[in-house]
Amino acid sequence: MKMKYQINISVVLLLFVSLFILSSQLRAQNGWIHQNSGTSNNLYSVEFIDDNTGYAVGKNGTIIKTTNKGNTWLPQVSGATGTLYCVNFINVNTGITVGESGLIRKTTNGGINWFSQTFCTSYTIKSVYFNDVNTGIIVGHGGKIRKTINGGSNWLCYCSGTTNNLNSVYFINANTGWAVGTSGTILKTMNGGVNWLSQIAPTTSYELTSVYFINANTGLITKANYNYTRSMYRTTNGGANWYEIYTGSVHSLRAIDFIDDNTGYLIGDEGDIFKTSNSGANWTFLPSGVMNWLYSGTFINANTGWAVGTSGIILYTTSGATGVKQIGTEIPRKFELYQNYPNPFNPSTNIRFDILKSSNVKIVVYDNLGRIVSELLNEKLSTGSYEVEWKASGHPSGIYFYKIITKEFSDVQKMILLK
Image (spheres, rainbow, N blue to C red):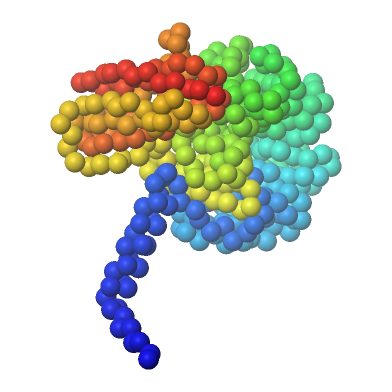
C-alpha cells in the first residue's frame, strides 16, 4: 500500500527562512563576509577611492573593479598577462598598477582603459606610491627605485644603495618616505627619493614585507615570519631606532592600513587579521574565518574595510571586524569576568564577561612577570554578555593573567597554557 505524505508548505518555508537567518548569523559572526570576486587568481592588492569604488589586482594581469562596495566585481582589460602586485589610485580617474618584469599599467578614465607605460628595466616592481598625479615612486627587485614627475611618462633612476629586493614603499609627504625589503633592508629618503639612507633593523635575517607611517615619527614594518618570530617592527622616532613588538601571529604579515593615528589593521597568512587601537603598540586578533593567505587590506572608516588574498578571496566588513562576540542581550545583574574555558588550554581559550551598562571595555593578557603580551579588546560595548578568544599558539606554556578594565569595574583571572 502506498502512503501519501502531505507537505505543509508554510512549515517548509518557515524552516528555510530559519536556516537562512542562522546561516547569515554564522557567516557574519566573525565580522567578515565573503564577496564574489569572479576570479580564482590570487589577488595581491586592493584599494578603495571612496565608499563604493574600489580596485583589486593580481595574478595573470587580473584587474577587477566595483562601484557598489564590492557587491559586484567586474573584470577589466589590463592588456597584461604577468602578475600585478600593487595598485595605487591618485583620484577617481587616475590609477597605476605595477608588477612582474617591469610591468606598469595606467588608467586616466577610472579603469575603462589601461595603457602600458615605458619602463627601463625588466625587474619585478612590487610597490608604487603617488603623492599627486605627477609625482610617484616605484620600488622592486634588485633594489631598483624609479621616480616620475610627469605622471609616469618618464621614470628617473635613483640609487638605493642596495641590491636587495624591495617590497614596499610609503611616503608621508612629498619629501619623506621609506622602502623595505629582503635581508632586513630599511631605507629612508628626505628629498623625495633622490637619496636614500639605510636604517638599522633589529635583525637582518628576515624579509620585510610592508611599511606604513602614521606620522613623521611613528611607523610600522611587517615581516615574513618564516622562522615563527611572531613579531613586527615599530619606531617612534622616524626610524632612527626600530624595535620588535609582539603581535600574536606565528604567520607572515603582509600589509598595514590605518584609518587614523590610533586605529589600524594588519593582514597576513592563514587568514590572520589584527587590529590596534593604540598606534600599533598592541594588537588584537580578529577571526577572519578563512585560512587563505591575505596579501592586502584597506579600510575607508572605522567599520568598513576589505581584505584580499589567494584564490581570489575578498573579505568585507561593516562592523570593524571586532574580535568580540556578543552571546546575550539581557541586562546582567552586574559586571562580571568569568573563568576562561577550556582551562588549562592549548592553543586557544575563550573569555566570557558581562557588561552591566554601556562602557569602554579593555581586556589585556599578562605573563607571570606582569608584562602585557596581548590586548584582546579595547572598544565601547553596550549592555550584554560577551566572549572573546585568545589565540596563544605563539606563546610558551605557563601561567597567564587576563584583566578586564572599565570605568566602573576591573577584575583579574588566572589561566594556564599547557602545551
